[in-house]
Length: 263
Image (cartoon, rainbow, N blue to C red; front, side, top):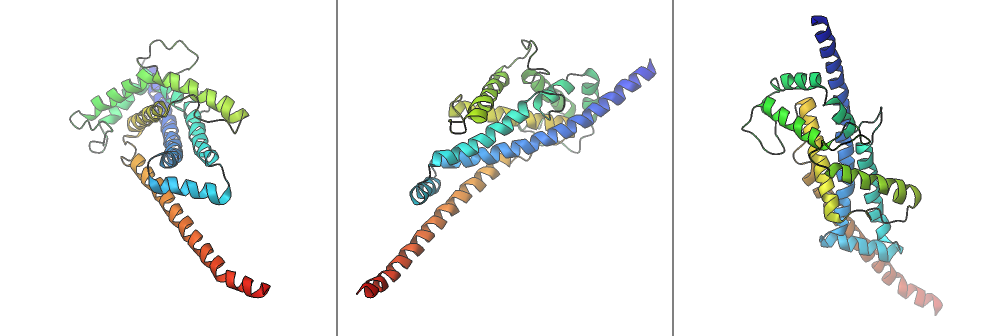
């Protein structure tokens, strides 16, 4: 009996190690998602520098800037598809959903939570609860949204939002991206729905990272990416303006010589 418990505990420890690798990969994919999406938002938003940079690209290079925005949307969708894919070797949320449902894994995670260094920053800023309760809450949050198997009967899930998002993301990947690179990438979503999808995935990855590593993702992940994207297009706008001024100066400087030569 004691030997059986020891074996189960060792197996649970290995599953946790596996999950730690998965959550780190998810964190990297999440970085890709927000890198692409914040550039899309910067170009689609109200920032005058971003909009003027797009106009300059369109005018100077006769380039359809919708294609540029589609590239960012495509990168975002492909990363999200990877994060929600299912398979034996997928580093994805369903893999976390499967591992976290093992009772021995949960028991070991709750025990480990008591040894977290300090009280971790929580995305909900729940500073008043102890670590084990916080860990249990995040386990419950993941179980309520993330299935162990997309194909199974998932009526037990409290929230079906991730299921809905995943179906739309898969449809975009399999149809608009795989078969028609010119199609509008986000055709299955409204922009607000897509933002909601990103917020949910962000929260789930953050919760999984906390549960399996004792640490949440950087609190400034999204604001930092937003700042970088807006700064990039701001300087792109400045660069285009300076280049136009330089070319205009060169043309005006060369004009008299052309007239003199023709005379």
